[in-house]
Image (cartoon, rainbow, N blue to C red; front, side, top):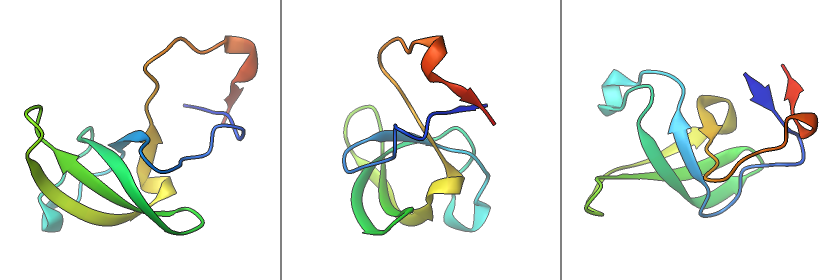
Length: 81
């Protein structure tokens, strides 16, 4: 897994869930959007279908999420964790 401390999660970032949360009917790999930041590293994430219909809105910690990128990243800017 790669993490760049300069790329902190922020409002409207696209993220993926890193763990199964069956009690919330959410599972690893599901994609959502950060819609609120309550405190550092704690976010409200909206999970929506490809047609834009929201099916879950949950408060999650940054360590439960992976920031997704829609553009190439330079390998020399990434740090292995």
